[in-house]
Image (cartoon, rainbow, N blue to C red; front, side):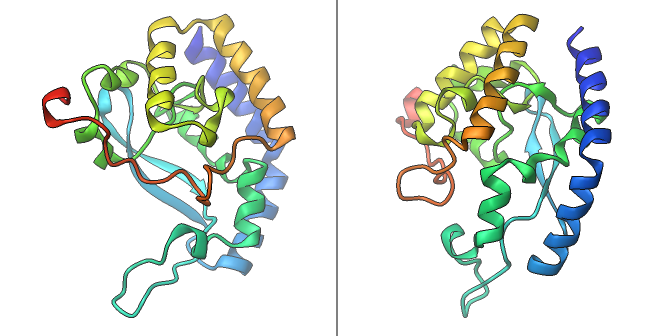
Length: 202
């Protein structure tokens, strides 16, 4: 039922937002340049890698050594607008159709985080990742990494069709209210560096 619901909704949403996505793509091209789509490898179900798609929201500004500048420097006002209304996430509907992710599930994070998870936190990969999830409607980027992972694991162990519907409804509410976008003084969620000792990790 979950997969059929994902395909039905993703197809409908792609048709509904196709014009908006076209306009966003043109604006990204003009304001930020190419590539329009940000593509990055992320861990999916059982941590199997896949490529996630998003509209680009940052510039490629680098320092004299060729290193990318901090997110808060590269994130433009236009990029902030896209993130504020989650417009940058729309290309992930294609990921849903491909079966890489679901509409609802733990957000797919960076591959480098896998080695930092505890055995308990790793359980977030027992289900497909999603465009939105239990952590996103309970704080999004305003909560700590530990709380985010706790909510993800709870979802992985208690997910149901009715819970998914509840999360989707709460997501629309969060998007319209533009809540939980920033984490304290960071433009985005700070990099997760682990919080436990090596003994407590996997």
